[in-house]
Image 1 (tube, helix red, strand yellow):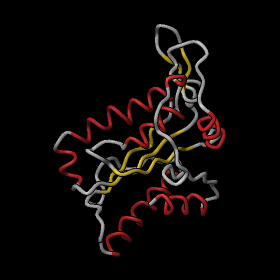
Image 2 (cartoon, helix red, strand yellow):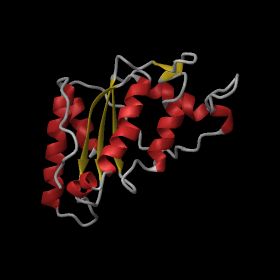
Image 3 (cartoon, helix red, strand yellow):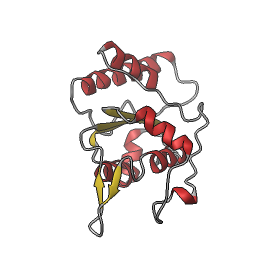
Length: 189
């Protein structure tokens, strides 16, 4: 799916910085010295490299499977470490943090084995959106272009079903490239 999105971005003249966190061996563990709760905190070298690689992106596109109807530890750790203080937000005293990415956007695509209507009716969709997407957007200032989930994604899916989801994703990628917002929630279920 991420490659299909990247293909549309490139076809529309965009530049893609592709980060497969598992392949690069990203460590999602937030280390004590990275915590912004003390003077002199600083990101580790791997985070500095990531920030340099993605720092000038206009749109951050996230692709991940839902585990227990939430982002997996890998993506959560990436967000906590890479999009932390000094990159995505800065301290602003007692009134909270100041977003640093307000001139940029984010879009999220997820997949799950469960049907999308179950994810929504169970309450998991709204909880995840509020806790992860909306909060992340508010803290960083990223304009949220939407979160689209593809339900019923399983090993052994037929080629026709995968092609259908890919076409749906590529239409949404084109929408993002034209400055639009994607439909929330319901994907091919």
